[in-house]
Length: 133
Image (cartoon, rainbow, N blue to C red; front, side):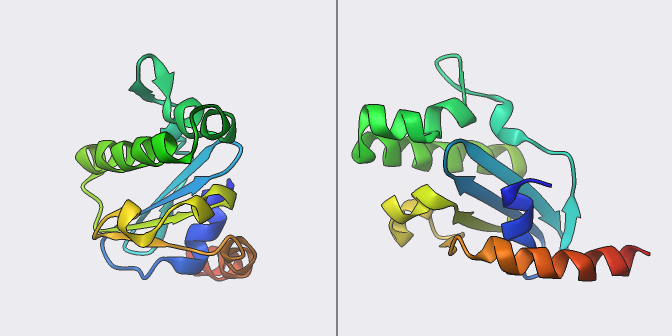
C-alpha cells in the first residue's frame, strides 16, 4: 500500500473510475474502480517528459528546482497525460505539495484533498478488507 492508496480509501465515492495522485517527495498513484482498489499500480514510474518519469518530474526536488509556477504546469500536463491513458471519472490530488495548487489546477474532474485523508483511509482499509473476505 502506498500513500495514494491510503488517501484514496478515505475519499473515493465508489462511482466509476477514480484516480488518486499524491504529490510529495515523489508522486504516488492509486486507481479505484467502483470503489475497489486496483492494487500494485505505480503509474508515476512510467515515462512522462524528456525521459523523466512523473515521479521525477513532479517530485519535491523538481518543484524546488523549477519553482511553483513551472511545477504547476507540469502537474496540469501530468493530469492530462493520465486522463488520456485512463479516462478516469474522478480525480483526487493530495499529498504535502498539493498545497501549492488551486482547485483550477486539477481540472473539472479534480478535487484537492487534505493530507490527513491518509489517516482516515487507514481506517477504511479494514472495511474494504472485510468486504473481500
